[in-house]
Image 1 (cartoon, rainbow, N blue to C red):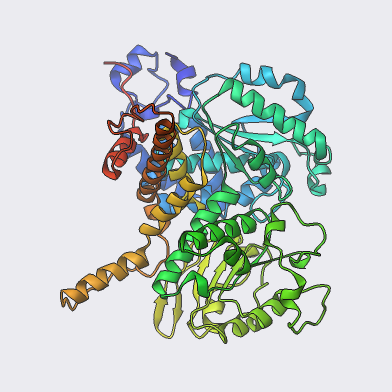
Image 2 (image 1 turned 180 degrees about the vertical axis):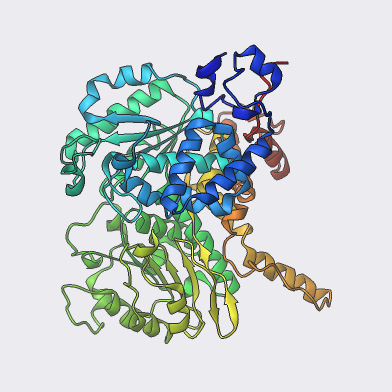
Length: 585
């Protein structure tokens, strides 16, 4: 056990003013702390007062970073108690500014900085890491950060933020996680010419050299942490899908931009369809922004349509993608492998009225296709104009319009405008947090499609089940579990029950019109998602065992697969809670 100043300087064991009298004697702390001995709750009260004194979001972020580096338990307890208020500072939207200012605001290192320039030392880097006990890694190469693009080494704050949410919402032990940035250069000229930039000052690595470096990295990870859950984050559109595809059968992998975003968005779409009493077969879906997130959402929509009874061919016919080249067609140039599955044939649009047949715009698609669902993943502020939204609303009773780009200044439209332009008919959700909209004296809460409602539970479910692969079926069950927590669906069920029982007063909670739960409920949602993922992992493992006639217990369940209640109890026991340990009995 550490003593004196060394103990106080180690954030993982430091208790600050909460060290007891006996601990102060045992570990030579007398005189190094004020004489008052406080509880964790008292420390949280003081820390929250200090947090509120910060005069800007940037200062609040810096305060939280310093607290994180000083006292891990106190940091997590503060965030847990004030999750709804602090989450936008730790994660979206403020984390974008933290990433941008990384080199200028740098104070102390956290995580691993794996640079291509030091590739010859990669084995030693992992061999020298303090522990083998890592359950979860979040890694980024910093090319596709939120809506702000290539941020080089500053992107380390994205894995840090994600792992904080894995702990606060998913209950994953923060001492068993590792944030990593792969420093493979940057094409951001402002960074390359910034004298304070801390990353490798070279154009971004591409091609064979990039692929070989990623392969070398994965090999080193598997050697050091063979059972780790590897979360790929904010990789560029040319690499995100290909990297996930290449390694998901080799190491338990997850890409939140592809898969997490898709789970959350499709759960919200399912809720919107249910509450508006619509069917997948009736939908004409347009997604503007066919990058990592847009394609991931499209792929999950195809899955949802197939579960609803549509054939794969029928599903693909109903999904249309638009990107920088315009509407994606078979003759569109520079398509990524992931985009090619969603192209449409020229003959499908021969009857369309177009201004320019060589570049088919969003306005063209809305005018001719009359979409019922419009999703924005473009990071282009103001892209969904009044003309486009009004045109869409003329041809569908309840237009479903999701403005998914982050941060707020990249959002395709303002929810208040969308609701006004559709005469209150639109079902709206966003990627960033927005205040409720008041329209004709009615308060309309705006659903936030935040990945924090999905990935913490997915991670805990994978880790708890010891799954060796995150399968598509596990992701679908995560989507279904999230849908089951939808306030608007719960309210509809409650209303139906009240009507059957002739109960006159069945007014719901103020958030009852939300398609997805508010972030304040994200921890309870994570438990539901984790249980669903874990149970599906068990079913798949049981099927595998049955196929070789070797029936054994899985994760302690006597029948091989737990009940939902058993799964929730099992996961609840795995949840890490921010509490101080007694160092002296």
